[in-house]
Every structure is written in C-alpha cells, then in structure tokens.
Length: 421
Image (tube, rainbow, N blue to C red; front, top):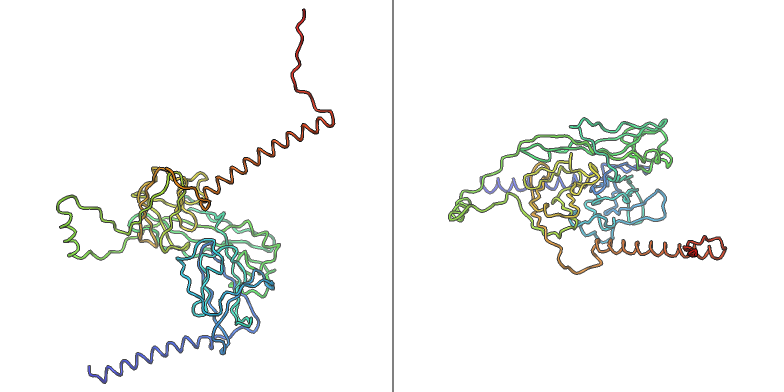
C-alpha cells in the first residue's frame, strides 16, 4: 500500500468520525420538544442508580440545567447544577444516605442519580438557566423495606393482584438476572415493583400502558395511593445452573518460576481472586459489600466452601438471623463470633471476583469515641434507663403526697400487738 492509499484511508476515517459527531449533535434537532409539558413515569428500587436523558432541547440552548420538585407546583425547587460544570461523581464514591445534591452527576445532558433513596421520589425537569422547562420525569423510588421474597423451588407463587373497585394493584417484574454462580448450583432472581391501573389518574403524566403507572407516581390521587400502600415490592428467586467460561491459562514462564519457588517445600496457597484482609472485634457488627455490585446485579456469597444461598440467608427469611444478605446484595454479620472467621467470596454476574479474609480478635481495650454508633447506642440506653427510674421515683412520691393531702392513703405500716398478761 503506497502513501496515496494510506492518505485516502485516513481521510475517510476522519470523515466518518466527524459524521458520527454531527449525527449525535443532530439528535436534538430531530426530536421536537412537546408543546405541553408531560411527565414520563419511571420506577426504581432503593439503592439503585438511574439515568434520566434529556431527549430534546431548543437549538439555541447549549447547556441544560436539571431541577427537582417533590410535588408539582411546590415553592421549594432544587437546582441540580453549579452553573460552572459539575464535577463528575463516581458511584463508588457515593455513600448510602448522602444528600441527593452529592449523589448526582450531569453527563451529555443526562442526569445520573446514584444510590437513590425513597426521598428522591418526585419530579425532575430538564430546562435552561432561566427556568424554562422542556422535558420532565415522574420518578418513583420504592423502598426495599418489607420486600416480599418468593422462592419458586419451594412452590411459592407471587402476590395476587388486588382489586378495589376500578383500581387494580399488581406487580411488574423485571427480566431474570444471570445465574449468580457458575459450575455449581446457583440462583437467579427478578425484581418486581408495585404498579396500579385506574381511570382516575392525572392525564398530564405519560403512561407506558393505558392508565398504568407505578404506585408512588404523582399521577395517583392521594386516596388511591393509600389503598396501594400495602402492596410491597417483590423478589422472585429460583435455582439455576450455568457452566463456567474457560479462562486463559497462566503463562508457562510464570508457572515455571512458581514451581521453582515452591520446589523446596509445599506449594504455597495461590488465591484465584484478589483477597482483602480485615480484623473485626468480637461482638461487633460487620457489613461486607461486593466490589462494583449494584442491587440489580446477580450477586452471591460463599464462606470458604459453604454456599450462602438466598433461600436460607436472605433478609427476612428468619427473624433471628445473625448472618444474612440484604436486598442491596450486602452481607451482614451481627455480633461477630469466633466461628465467623474465614474467607468470604463474592460472585458478581456469575463470576467470582473478590474475597475477604475475616479475622476475629478479642475486644481488649480501645478508646471510646462518640462517633462509634455502638457507643452512642449504649449511652442512649443508659439515659433511657435513668429517665425511666426517675419517672417511676417521682410518680411514687407524687402518689404518696396526694394520699396524705386528701387523707385517704391506706396505712401499710405493721401494727404492733401487745402481749396479753
């Protein structure tokens, strides 16, 4: 290939890239904004991250600003921008319970909200700095507290639809997740969120199906929302079996060095996944998170060679569980005991990706800090005990004073009988 052909190919490649950029910029020109502002309904589960695209904007607008309102027409509106370019927020840096202004990011005119909480439910507007709106969303974040787990292997069935006159309350399930383990029996599940169907919904909210929105939508009147409040999200779980993908063999040179090092003694233990070491005090609680996992991912936990299946270890299966998996795929260990020592492996989307070697140490002496939640809980219990004792003490003395003032208090002092001569 001569220089002329190379030049022509590079010129054609550059033209294609320029055409692709122009096509992305012309998306907003091809998508007209609605003449009357409507709200697209979207529902998610607690701790999920979601993205709200801004599919249209006027041609003269070069940057968008996102706004948030709890209710339509509310005087309190949050502006989700700093007007100078938002610093990009990564999902791994966001903690549970952080304010929404810390948990969002704007990328390519789209709004990203990380680890959503029920208080993030509301109306999101895509607009300009002057407050002109041209697209809006009605977001419903449903709480995982009280989530109903259904195990198909045990013959259980999902919740039945509820009917209240013309109101129908039902569960809409997402797609099945991949099998959470490979090579052994695993589990897969699908999340179900609460939806309702009624002819009495507000016409300003756009529905996927006729008269169907999520239960927490602002399109639902208050009296209908109260009837649907007892219908909790669901989790449908079933067994599965998936073969493991063949991994690339370790290079022969690395194995030769490894065999040479282990030639004298026994071959040392070589972990197949990265292992993190952690020391935990005896009797204290611990929560382990799987790296890069989200609530919608297929996540599994093992302890050494024991598989922690959700059928036995899902939160709520047993009220007295000390070790359990919550609906956000976190592994909880309450009141750590010596038998909890070992390696806890984490599976994500059918692949084992990390391990946590847990060591348990005796309490010993450690400085008391008021930032420790257990210290605050202990102080709270002590104060409540003192307050109860004080209330009981004052109540007894007030009763005795009232008795003596009105002279009807019985005399409980023992009478001394005189001996008869």
